[in-house]
Length: 238
Image (tube, rainbow, N blue to C red; front, side, top):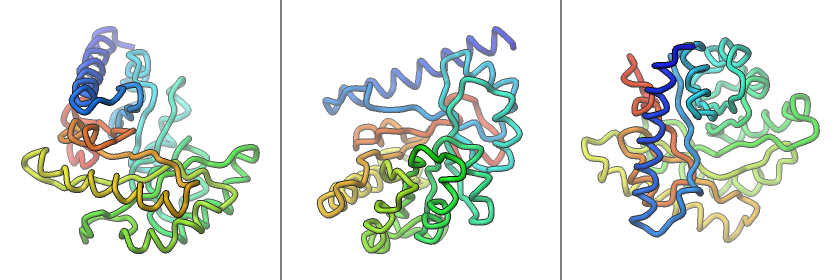
């Protein structure tokens, strides 16, 4: 493990946490209510060992296969799947990850529910429901209307703990232009929890370019890659 890399990652983490704290201060929130997921797509296991040593203990991966190659080599981390999940990889995802943030259909939720007791027989498996708030054809996720129709059934599934909702912000030039997406997810969560109070209140939203705005709009989890690990080719998780 490279001490210089640990120091650089520690400083990057501190910078992100300072930005989160400043955003919380602007809207009267406690920064302790915001969790940081360091999106480690394409980052090798050796550097992730340094990241954990730097305090980045919650890591997010986009692909099941890539995570499987890292999980056994990087101790002390909690792993979130933040990228799309194909139904045929559901069992592998349950085994590799501690949380799946990208449940984007009722069929996938039902499949995870059937398989989860084999992986975690004593606990409900934590998930987020991914919402395509902007009805963007390029993004996965429930449309708001489809989620409203399905959420009660999903929350009632005995193998899953639905912590809340997740979305991906708009790809925009100015972070401020992503605000309507984040506000819409917060409003949708509040609306759904009136009828389905067992839906968790967590909101996973905001990435490197826009996480401060997401925090101002109520994010409880931000998924930050580039601001911690630097630019990576095809880094769609930012």
